[in-house]
Length: 156
Image (cartoon, rainbow, N blue to C red; front, top):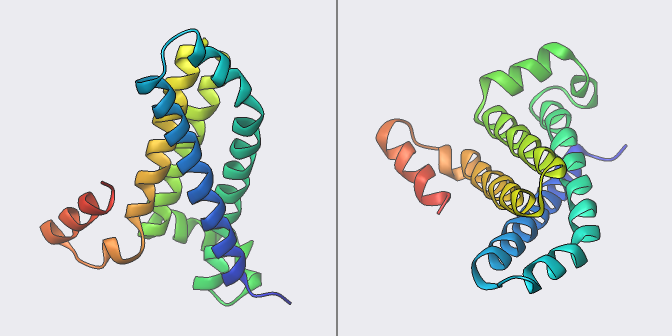
């Protein structure tokens, strides 16, 4: 059976790439491109945005069970509610995961709004998704003020 570690790496790659595209394309259009070209380009990118949102949603939802299986005793722990709750609520990985869910909700809220609100939701959701990456790994190896500064530096 395949190890959860490469699958988690694939989730991380998908999350990083999709969030970078959503945030970067939205911010570029918002800051550098005027109307009516902005609206035309925004519409042309709609298919990519939908695809990348699906990729983000899949990566975020898959990452918690994968992390639980890595931190626990293998694949069996990927579906134990106690282990999932422990990872989601008791680790920095869980904090990042909850933050990513907030970003997903922001991206979903943008679906029902005007083009301008969709663009702003895309920028905010992608930015929060990218910021959540600083909540895990080496950025959280220190505690106290040193840890907070390290996380702030990592999210810049």
